[in-house]
Length: 232
View 1: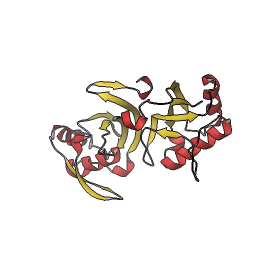
View 2: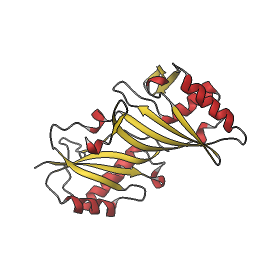
View 3: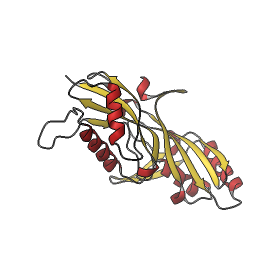
View 4: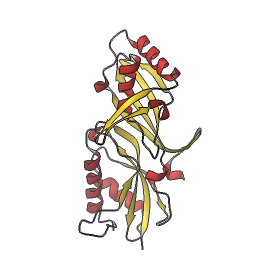
């Protein structure tokens, strides 16, 4: 009997600089240590049936990741949560979770269409006003073109397709930005790329390499509605 669970998990400060692949491996090893009846794919290279909503870049922490795991038999949910919590490394913690239908249920990657980020951005002394004005110019722009590069090549995108507005709050050493990024079937944009655009095209007086990015939420969004993947 196949059983599936959807879990909320974290990628904390201790594993901020761990790659998505190593993050997945850490979770798979923890599942093996729990002796949970994990399901595996068939073939010469079977892999554990775990699926994530959206991969995180190296250096980005998260307070709200989600994953689906398939088991080959029923387990006590509370015992599963406790077992995983005891085996996961520092920085990876299980939050809410629930059983989902084993078949016919929408996959995380198919339904999650919005990511929220908090970005701590140090600024040179005395430049907070200039930074606020730069973000204001970005928010007022109707179109912002950007050449996005990936292993497949270069592609011109309109940043405003994915980010309509950046909210900025002054903090002791700079700014704290709140950014919502749309995830579409044809692509998205990384928060680090948004910072790069703000610096290069709008004169934000900051060093993009010093930005500290944390994903604060993944959502199934419809207009102003924001629903956790655990609540659909």
